[in-house]
Length: 181
Image 1 (tube, rainbow, N blue to C red):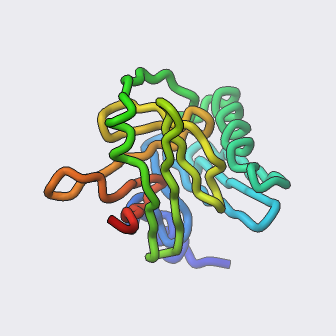
Image 2 (cartoon, rainbow, N blue to C red):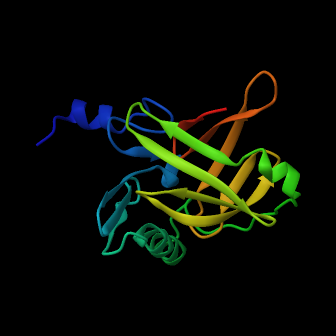
């Protein structure tokens, strides 16, 4: 259905970890591509390792199904030894409430697709929420500007402007800019 040239172009990184359509990443046996999808009441995630000839498509019937799909993919990765995809151990750093407040806000993206992520703090915990794909999830910090959702394994990297103010968040190959002040 696709020419070899079109398929190669689709799987060649074009923009922030994406080919023409799917997310692409990894090297050697860990090279993979995938794509998520969502409709009201459903979530799906596809991951495929062309070198290994292995992959999975996970489909859920819940708006909160992305976390479950990720957990299933991590279990498959552990069972079938998918390189660069398996669960990992991390070391976290403590962040005080004042430091966490610097990340609180609404972040938006308009190109290549629309999206919005809300970052909120409750006590000493930072929460991230993206209505379509990311259920409200707590994050821990690996470094001063790098956080991780223990639930989904998603990494968030916060960027700053010239004055040192957090003005963007990068996740899943996408950059979202802070809205408002």
